Length: 212
Image (tube, rainbow, N blue to C red; front, side):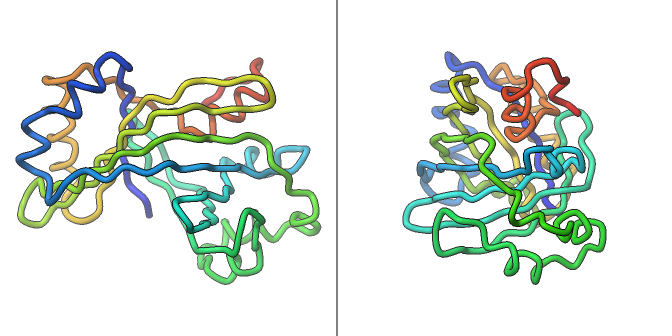
């Protein structure tokens, strides 16, 4: 289960976040920056979206990763979702290897739909620069802070990405939440229940509520 808190940040406040003495105090090492190129797949009828799931292939450096996310819940910017991820050879999906990883019957049922692999096609992209800090917030609590800046694109339409994600790597969720409140006192931040994937689907169909 992936557990992360998503917070929107204004572009004008990014420099303030990067230079916070608090991050330097808590970080286990220097920040790491990489460019992430992501393609999301679904059927023409948006089978995965209808099941509140997302399937993507990501290029990170020289590596390609495919990821399936589904289930879980979102509340007050806190996203708790099942996630399965593994390396693939390139930009194409490798659904059989993904199915072999998944041990959740509900998730398997979504991906095992007859003919699904033949129907999957790219539906939108999210390309952004990610800067990460690994933070020791308490003796047993480690959190990754990721700052993402880029864009979601579907056809000729696009939306900016400017947000941070606090992902619980180990330890207590309450420690993460307390740290988020501390950050909010130093930089203007707003909790967001809307994922990058939901923004991409909303770009394809602006008439639909992105939270659905």
